[in-house]
Image (cartoon, rainbow, N blue to C red; front, side, top):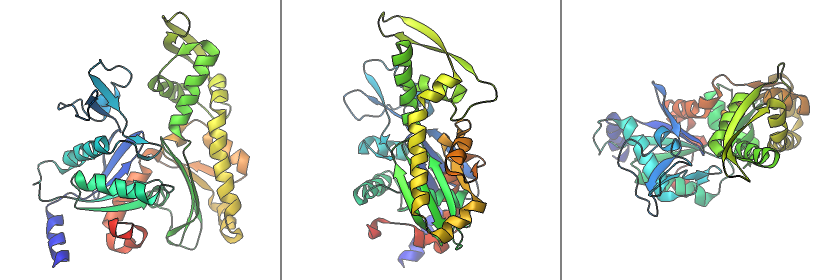
Length: 352
């Protein structure tokens, strides 16, 4: 009876997969692909958790407010290092995204939701994700480890006895995993990713140029001239900020070689994680990777020549996935299309 009612509810809902990221949240709907990709940022009234009630409350418009809000408004990122840092704000953000996708569907037709999570989070943190999604309007919540979702989204043969290695570099975490036989044979999750790359640039500009900049300015520098390996033609970029000593607006011109050096620390941490996973991998599976190589996805995979830097360090072929930003979200959509077949790799509240 319950399964019948569940199917009936499914006829009147829009089931969705969510890549709930530290920097961005993406939503994928089976048959329609990734239909939403916005920053994981919420604008609230300062001193409260009251979300602004206009179109500026969540996502792109809220991100524009970071570092620029007036005294009565605060822009908050409810996710930190891949986990929920503010439950109420995260719930409000999820509710906003779910309602946007549901459109004019009736309130009783709540969706089934597959949410991708970092592989290294605790049981308590998993329960928090499920609880927040249920309160935000999900009928049923399934959790999937981000590397598994990425592997599925990239079309890797995850159910075969052949190894695939995926490195998912997001905003808050980097996930490294060897996938085979519908499981993660070896994996590691480190809280070094896009945010740490941005922080490294902020620190560099402060120390080298006495220029104070915000994380959004650092991200623009990273996108414009950031790299992990020498470029054929080095680049320059004019950075604007506030001078540390005078307190006045100033600018400075930096080049890609300087930014590459600034990013050296976090990049090496990511490479070390890849090495540790490779060293733990069984010889038979490691042999598969000589031919299949390593695939990079997530926003961090877009850092220029990161694939070349990792390949030089581990002496295994490395490639960047096509459309690396949406790999995890696309994987959640495939899972929803094959829920009965892939249920074994998912977790629900009953499993925790």
